[in-house]
Image (cartoon, rainbow, N blue to C red):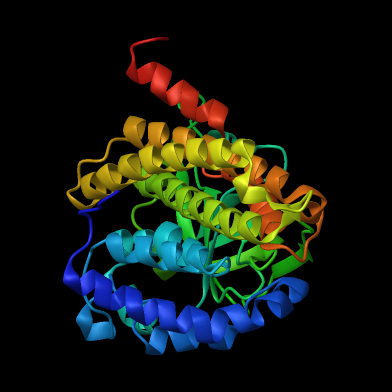
Length: 383
C-alpha cells in the first residue's frame, strides 16, 4: 500500500543505508553470527557515513535532526536484506535518547562526538536476576560518598554489554517504603572503572549478532559527574522513553514479517512438489495472501504511530497497542512462512529459520505481551 511517511530526504538516506547493508553487512553476516557480535569497525564506518549521529547536535558531528523516521529506515533496510544491525538499534533507539535528554553540557562535550562517530559504544543495564520487568524491585545500589557514588550489584540480559564503553546503570540511591519507584538514579559507568566486570556472554536462541551479557559492579566508584539527570528521578526517565522503545520493537517486527513473506514467495515459486511449483497450490496462495493483508494493516498502524512519535504525541497506551499487535503479526507470519519451506525451513542455512528464532523475543523484551495488555486494559478504564 502507498506510504506517506517519508520525504525525499529520507529516501536519499535509504539509498545510502541500502548500499551499505548490501556491501558491508550481508557478505559478512554469517561470520558475525558465529562470533556472536558485530565488529567495532562497522560502527565506526556507520558513524563516518552519518548514520549514528542524526539526532545529535551538529557541533558534535551530528545532524541535529530529532526525526525517528531515519531510525525506521535503518531497520527496514536491514530486514529487507534478511540481516540485522546488531546492537545499533539498541544504541540509537533505546539508549541515545537518555543522553540527549539528560546529559549536561560537560557530559555532552565528553561523550557526544564519540557517540556520533561510532567510537563510543553503549549499553543500558536495567534488568537484574530475579526482577524481570519489575524495575521498582531493583536491588543494585549506589551510595553517595563525597563526589562519587559507590555502586554494587549485578545486571543480566544486557544487550551490547560486550563492547560497551559507556553503560547506563539504573541503581537505587534511596529507599522509600511507601513508593517503590522512588530513589532510582542513572549512572554512566565507563570502561576500565575498577570493580566493573563483564560476566558470561549469554547463549540465545536468536538475535545472535547482538551480544547479550551479564555485568557486575563491585564497589565501583562512579563520579557524580557521571550521573544522568537528577538523583532519584530515573523511574520517570525510563517511562518517558518507553513509547519509542516499544515502537522500535514493533517497527522491526513488521519489517521482518514483510521480509519473511517476500523470501517465502520467492522460495515457493522455485520449489516444486509433485512436479508443480509450490506457489501454484491454493494453500500457498491463501496463506501468503492472508499474511500480506495482516502485514499491511500492521504497517499502517506503525506509520501512524511513527508520525505521532515525531509529533510528540504518541501515548504509552498506543505504543503498547502497536507493540502487542505487530509482534503477534510477526509471530504468525514467520511461523506460517517457515511451514511453507517444509523441512528446509528448519535448517539454519535458510534465512527463514533465523527470522523465526529472532522473532520470538519480540513478545518478551521492552515489556511482554502480557504487560502490554495490562497497559491497554488500564487505558480502557479496567482496573
